[in-house]
Length: 288
Image (cartoon, rainbow, N blue to C red):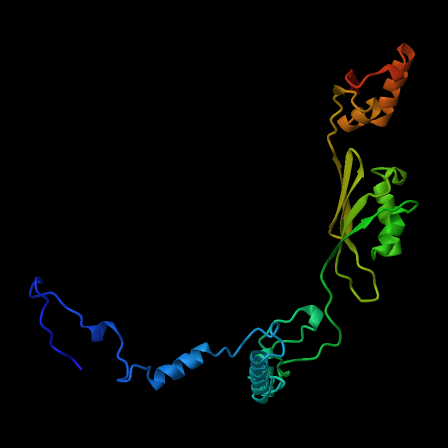
């Protein structure tokens, strides 16, 4: 309810004034608080969750225990339980759709690689009595220790007669004993007349010696051999450096051959003690 009040003397007409009823809450006519305020104060003073570690056995403690039991019981009663999660539904693709999609995939060889669209043979397909052969085979053979040139050719698929003829022809350019083990021989085998016959040699190439390369090529019915000299630089090699950890190691790292280093050490040993060579000393070798 609103009441009109006169302004206080000495104040302007726009100033506001508070009455006692506005400053102090209204009370009952008998001066006591209302029943709503009493209930509110009672619940405000009530502690439903007291500390259960203190005042054990008191009324306040039992009230806290009852509250805890009620809350736990409510949680257990409303617990929905544990249910296994249902797996995904039906696959997005049925069997026909999956096979259709799989036919367009690329699968590694390790997994079978049987993908791709397969089509049945038509009337245009004619079966082959035997698979066609490659017109040429290119391979590389290496001469081993105690091996012979002719046996190497035979292991590579060359006929025995032709292997012996090739070995004899190569021996006219370089002795077969001078061909070092580990020499690589490049071969090109041509088409054979029948499957029961060995393939003929179409071309052969190798570095028969450090300064000689031999190449053979079939022209018509015979192999023509060419000798290709390899230029070798025989300029004396001048090596200079510091002894460091050792004269032999340092010279070998610089490119000096072992025989030259040993001869160099023998000459030095006649002039001075090799053990007196220091790491800071320098050496000078000329290798012919």
